[in-house]
Length: 339
Ligand SMILES: [Zn+2]
Ligand SMILES: [Zn+2]
Image (cartoon, rainbow, N blue to C red; front, side, top):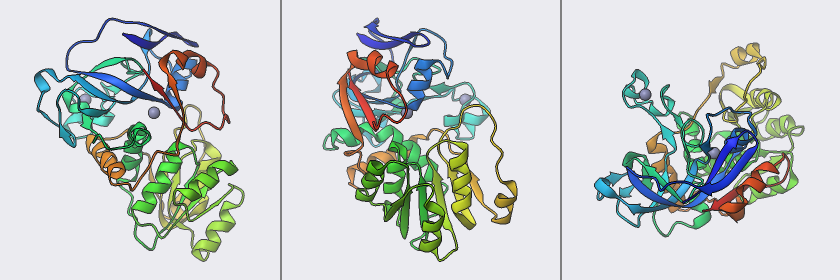
């Protein structure tokens, strides 16, 4: 079977690997690319080599094996079932796993990074990592389910009341999903903050009540909230200055979710501001199984959609070219490979 294998930093190849065995065998229909894959491929995130990349996976069960008929998240596992793969790997035995925080297991990790991933024709996955996706869910909605699961997890501990004004800083794929999720959860308003005019337009079409640039954001929030500041701010850009902006836009007693990942270095936060406003700062990572079930339910009911977020669908053979030639500001949203 064909797979996208990182042989050394910067050298991704598509080549044949032995057919995987064990667990439930899944044919991968689509594998989304995200920043994590790019950092693994260019060596910013070191991994042991060779490594099959990819963790945003949706496919169909080829052989359910011993797991046939088992209760997978949101449905029954059987041959032919369409499934979303929960890409986190955990040991199930350590103190963190036993506390119910398998997604943080220190002995585990992420498929495509700590263990082989699924940018490949076939993948073997334990049954408890599969979530059944109804056949009538649109193919692009399905493609965004793994990212949506992490967004659901990020908002899990955030209270949203119908009087709350929310802000999303950063309008990439995750930011655009957060905008939709906040609207679905009933926020009074959602301001989308981003640099690109085209993604601001997209945010508005997906439910943002207003949009603006980062420079315009303080005045826009002050106007929306009568000077009080936002009750919920989600930072989805992953830079020091955008975290500062998120803290700045938050009102008294607000919640700031640092969703964007900042790798390496140290950034001094305005600690006095955190104290003065008594802010709740959340740092969600990955997702739990139930977050993926919620993600499936959100797209199945039409409350969140990935349809305008998939910018390209390409054959797996294009993976080396696309990942090597990727640079920031390409205007791409989600790129999906179809193995
Ligand atoms: Zn990802
Ligand atoms: Zn563990």
